[in-house]
Image 1 (cartoon, rainbow, N blue to C red):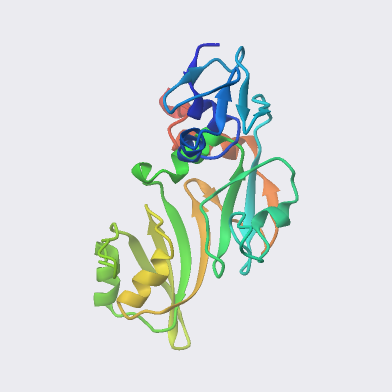
Image 2: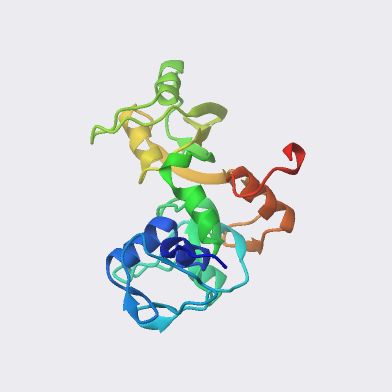
Amino acid sequence: MAEERVQKILAAAGLGSRRACEALISAGRVSVNGKVIHLGDKADPARDKIALDGKLLRLKQEKIYIALNKPKGYLSDIDESHPKPTVNDLIGIKEPLYALGRLDLDSEGLILMTNDGELANRLTHPRYKHEKEYEVFVIKQPDEEQLEIWRRGVVLEDGYRTLPAKVEVINNAGGGSWLRITMREGKKRQIRKTGARIGLPVAQIKRVRIGTLKLGSLRSGEWRYLTAAEVRRLRQYAGLEKDDKNS
């Protein structure tokens, strides 16, 4: 096997996204054949001994892909300073998995759990701008002007301008409305901040799609393994495999 950049090898082994693995290297936690490496260094995973914090890594592993319906009250990643349970507690798999499409504590819906670091990098890196779809309940019924502002992009309090989004009303309920929002970015608490900014306070967020993967009939707290066809479509969508129709 040819040499590759070590961050790519670590990501493929399920150590996290490419950026997360670059951070491990920059922190001096990764060594190759007993020597601490630097960002950009290469290795041959078939020949070299790659270690994290002095522990040799098992680089060849079965790829795992899990769709989870995260309930409210669960963290999307491990935070030892926070007492709340995490999505890993729901799955109970010892294999380290990366949560793609993190949701805040009060949000629910689809999260993809995987040790496919290459896919994790493609689906989470901002430059790829992959779609995520949400069902959002706002406590006021929006007028057309508010919807158009949300669609065009909103300047948040910190000065960041959100990218254009698809926003449509699903139905009205009481004094509020359910909206379907499709975005190509995911800043922290962006939907809640955007709604508050334009006078549409958000009461509930449920993600129903990541790229080609849909939540479907999974109940809150339930999870399932992806089918081979779902994995193939996701990897094609992310540009990691050729689409059979176009090959």
